[in-house]
Image (cartoon, rainbow, N blue to C red; front, side, top):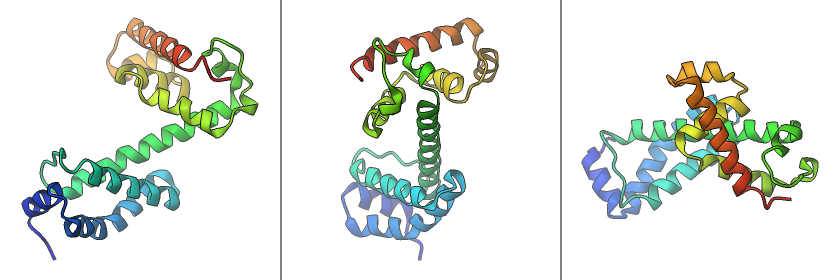
Length: 180
């Protein structure tokens, strides 16, 4: 059963729960499978799909879907899965390399005793860095790329990469100085 996309968009925007239910039933199984191929974890993919639909409902009045819902939803799942992978990589680095991370903080931190809630705060602060700073920081610290590789990959001058990395570390030190 195919329903006209404009009817779906209008119904969702107006808060029609039947339209939302239709979108969920129609697309969630495929989104979960797709998310599983990226995260390699079907339970995580299920949670990401649920988050995606929750956000879809919460943002329904301001949502701007160009074209049909399917590409929009799959693109959203792709980004959610990549963000989850980045966060996972960040957690692994924090847990396995406390020396490098402790340099970001104003006071000494024992990362062996750092609880998951504090790790979540750190991840959140990384996510809200300015876009270019976050990208450079993630590639340098999380993915362990060389600054020259980052510069080439992003089409930036190496000095610009150094500045973004320095700025990201400065912001994180300031925002996270209260974590003990």
